[in-house]
Image (cartoon, rainbow, N blue to C red; front, top):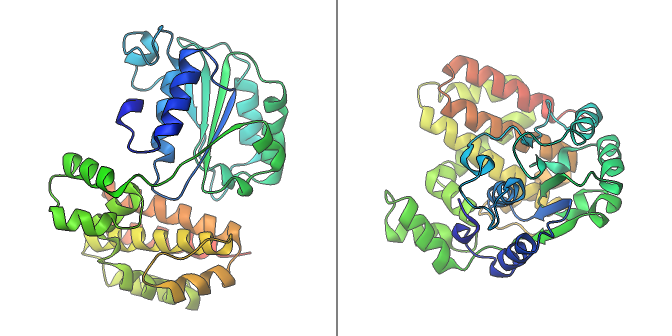
Length: 317
């Protein structure tokens, strides 16, 4: 995807275009925005612009642009529930290695809020004196999830949901299996990612997700029993995981001062009071992995066992 294909946020796109055209891309960028706002998509676009060696970035012609999996672009994912200080120390060492085929070596940290304090302080050391050929791209829901010192050494891009007409047009073009009425209903008051989640089953399985969370509050065994009822329904497994993830994200937003925009606000608000931000972040991550495992056709029994165990572990102090 090119920057022009990214829906909405015209001012941010112009800012990125201007920085790229004048070779003034910052050494660190933080992309903040709600779940489904396109943070990861924009991070990937900026990474390609930074890596490009052509004149008009991304040129589409240089070796960095033609490579779908560039060795100079690294995505830092959490180990278990967090991004550890050892991971960031390894990143810091790699940052001083000259790029293989690109203008810059780029490190994307798509779940930057999962860095613990030690990891953020380790990252701060390289942000203070970065090599000329490195760029860091962090994404999060809110910059207040990160240390002020990390934020102050980065350019912040705050994403907003696109206009509803633009969102509807994008989804209609790329997901023709949905009707205009379905798309319009899903796009009301949310991000494109939120609309796609709704279309893929979040609304359909929201009640089951609330019931699964209630089972989780009782214990891992009760959650396992609940999920076992959907052993032969892979769509339901994915839908419940997706809906649970949306509920946990909503609870995190409420805990951090935001508002609930879901039809199950009582459950969301209860979770926001019961669990810490770190626990809710871990639960979101478990649900994201659960959706990926479901799509990867993991065996039903193994999927249910792993998902329930991981979610139970995530809520522990």
